[in-house]
Length: 417
Ligand code: DSN
Image 1: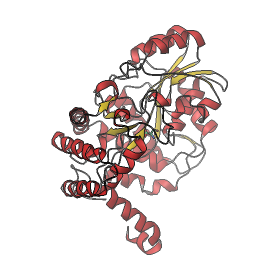
Image 2: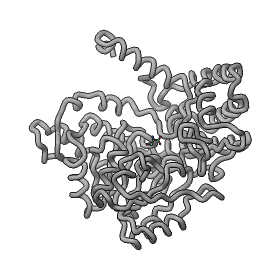
Image 3: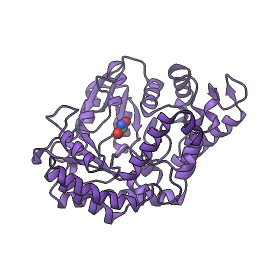
Image 4: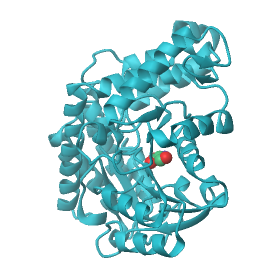
């Protein structure tokens, strides 16, 4: 870091401040995590300097023998981790991974059936402002209002009515197990390709704590930085039959040069995810989410679907006459980052919302356990009981800081980055 301090103090200070922020706050944003020092070392390496369009041993540039080692390792490890027939690890992000998966099996103008963002899906599953809603004819399914669970009957009826080319399963704010087998059955019945976006739950799937989509889907997409705890980026798994089309869709159709430093870091992440320690970590993520959900309920919060099976909890603030925006800002003042999130049938606009989404992957990486989850639920309740009261926020912030200072960024790694 000293080189950076001398050459660019503005950016050095911004990074130092961000590091302090990450240490001093209780990160509850469900899609965030803390990558290991080994991942960050690969990410900040000279592999950044190499152009390598193509695939290992089939590149458009010379001098690729060492980046090939990294990409081969990433491909072998991710294949072993998820039991996939084929993988492509070059997608720059989850959105690009989804785009590549869709265009591997469909052309623009095809019908795509995905879960509505307003019900816990994702922008790239057919929302009008995303490429997925602009280039495809999007049809959207959601969750049942009575129990917050995916409305499989609605999804199947829409599939039979619209005969989509693509059915997308997967979510960014859904706390329950997803029945990928059922999605696979209806996809086969209507002649659709099933694309599963497992970005949020990839770590749980790797650890065997959520049923795998791989046996049921034509293509599976993911990011590497959420529960998987790697560098920011994406990847796609698929059946052999789609392999050639997928690779050609990632490059040259959608992307140029792959980010070889990110691919090296993905290889490190997949290697970590193959360990027993990672599986144990995912178990703690789920235990912590259950404890957090139970404590929040004890404090009188309404939870969408009444609880959680995975790493996240969706809190419905409607009965408290609170918006997600107000809650997010109040918790931010107490150093508890969360994100405002729409709840099913939310009357508020997307930048206001009636809920917050909280998740346990990041704090579990830091070593937080069930006891701390109970403390956190109590702090959330205190702040949200009096969201405008700065004295309460300050008092909670002091307690947060005391607990945060007891946990290094990585429970399993003494070095702080
Ligand atoms: N932005 C991610 C999330 O927070 O879930 C999804 O892309």
